Image 1 (cartoon, each protein chain N blue to C red):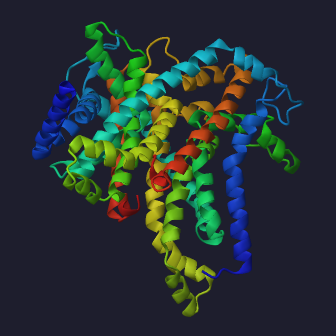
Image 2 (tube, rainbow over the protein chains, first blue to last red):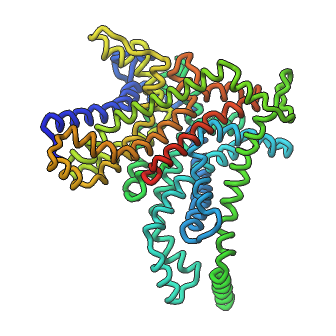
Image 3 (tube, rainbow over the protein chains, first blue to last red):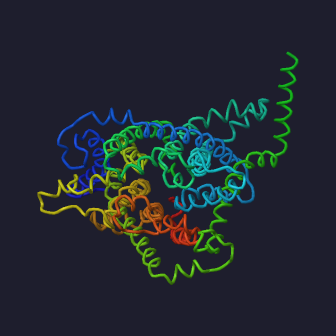
Length: 271
Length: 294
């Protein structure tokens, strides 16, 4: 399309403003973690590294970090297993209810988190309480895995769709049995999709707060729950700033890796 | 040696048996996921919506399993609920409209104006903040919008101050959060637009604006509808952002949240509101033919 010069300049400016609006808030968080002042007054009167050391020594934040890592790892493992199974079933088999199944898989991410959260919460309480088991870390894992399945499923399905079945058939013609075909042909083909899906699932779990609120047992605090609890406390504000800045810097890394691994599936992979 | 040979043989036999029975293979593939998804997830969802038809003992807050439509009639008759539901839909629509208006020029630049070699990089630049922590992004805006915060500092020379915490802040922050979900489909839609149509329009004497209105806009509208599914439904279910930057504003999610411990059936009934609205919205979008760009 041949655009007039003013239109071109206007579009370029609009895009520049758009990108600035997307990135400036993240920059504010990082800058504010060096703020010498406890408040969020702007501009900061001076810069200091003091809060970074304070955050490092903060046991609450550190424990919450490990809880998040544990929950994310377990949920990702479950999601990888279940998501891959569904992806193979949907992509390599024709069966009654296939469309309904691929719709139901997406549901946990499409419905509001609070609905998923209270549904799981009341189900856990009705099923587990008679058994004498309370909510804990494992209920968080179950909750997270439920929506993490979606990203794994989407990544693997997209990869399988692009992989012709003829490769597997050729292996079978050469005498390889089902497991051998999977180990030597299918798995290497989907491996990078699995890594990408796993990374995205971990990021999703690591970030989740709503479902976590309703599935975490007493004393189980993931990092988002910790931030949310401490956000309104002025005394904790500097440490919250540092934790937020660390999260901004950390989030860039796995996403970058996931992008590199699956340039074909990444754009729509979250939903 | 013989034992490994036997093991390999039984693996082969098992593989053969599986290969000959596709139904068995399928049920092995689907067994665990279906148990998880249908029994654990859909089951608890179904129970939740059934429990919307139960009542609560007002003294003990225990759920009483007596069927009644009490909660749903309260939804309709109680002015507070109606008001909050309408407000939530209004906020979700405002966020969607703002996202569409902001996303269009950005996507137009990334899809058609920017140098083709730079385009993939720009898409990554849109995607990356999508994965930065939700809570941190809301927190960033809490800082930005705070009194004497960065926004007030920027606006001070013009003699104005920021909107502070409230409904406007909620709309701004939700727009910020879900903007990438709108940019991406619009970018994809604009990228698919054939150059020949634009040339034809120019050959017929249309200037940029006319081409935009008569060719580009109608063809990209399905992508906007696809993006709006995310911006609309994600805004409608949100309650955390409102708690952090909304001041006293209440949305439907807050009502659900505040009723969970004391009156679960009422919370469940309130929770059906966003679900029903989202399903209706999805159906409307699907009818308009946008589902292929989802």
